[in-house]
Length: 335
Ligand SMILES: NC(=O)c1ccc[n+]([C@@H]2O[C@H](COP(=O)([O-])OP(=O)(O)OC[C@H]3O[C@@H](n4cnc5c(N)ncnc54)[C@H](OP(=O)(O)O)[C@@H]3O)[C@@H](O)[C@H]2O)c1
Image 1 (cartoon, rainbow, N blue to C red):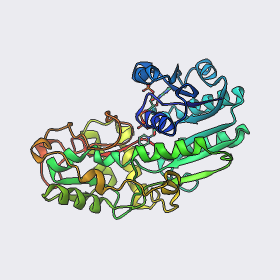
Image 2: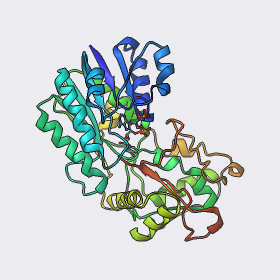
Image 3: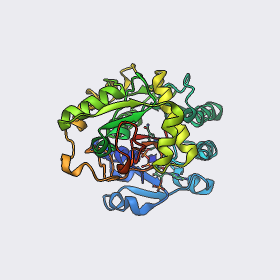
Image 4: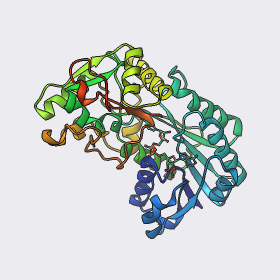
């Protein structure tokens, strides 16, 4: 029986496939599914099965899930369309008679009011209604939502947000991927709910201090009213609706809704989670840090910095100063 990974053409999904291979799962038992199979051509060369799917195309999902023992449904990246898309995947998994469907949800999905959580909550309800055996991987924020913005933080000497003194339990995609692989490889996972996040939550003030200390320069956190932060994100090029969702997510952090204290992630991966200090301790050279949009955090994740769940924007270089409008400040890409 195969294990199908949706979103395998994306950053998290690729890391899950790699984690399964690291755990000596035969490549031929893994199905890497996504829209753009060119992104997984190298995995196909290594013997991984690759199948084209579009969440909007139920037939493609049925084809990909045929013969699958387990499916990891990685949430899609098109907010607003995801309830229907995920429902299509759940229906196809049921039609295929899979033994388990694991879904990457959002931390604290059962009690968060974050706008971003609504589609995850609806998907969890659809899983319950399906009657399928399912496991929930309630992922917290990616650490890369911040580390991808290191160059911008250094350029402006500022981290912007509306998270107040709230703490966020961010963890790397690689750690979430290892946890997903662990769940896929275990028996008796039906009905399990994992609240996943980094071991050491931090405030955005602490993040700024960490970045500043690693770079040997002053970096401060500037907490903005949510409307102003939304404007900053729009000024940085994000669509208004998406900017509002991201700013709202910071309010969720302020309320403690991306704080995870379960310890589930480190237990699943069998070691402490990767800390903020680890990637921040490998900052780009200061002279390289000023190039706008080049802020590649030296993180463990993939190469893209998509503006989706969790990615933020930051101040434009022509408006430096304490209240500089953002060019590309980090914000989470949608969970
Ligand atoms: N916790 C967080 O902080 C956070 C941050 C960002 C995102 N997320 C969520 O976690 C998911 C995985 O994160 P990521 O960083 O791996 O995102 P990513 O790199 O953007 O990957 C998204 C994946 O979803 C696939 N996808 C999107 N729309 C699809 C559709 N209509 N049909 C089939 N596949 C589709 C993409 O396929 P193609 O590339 O082939 O088009 C890609 O493989 C995201 O999609 C999002 O729901 C969470």
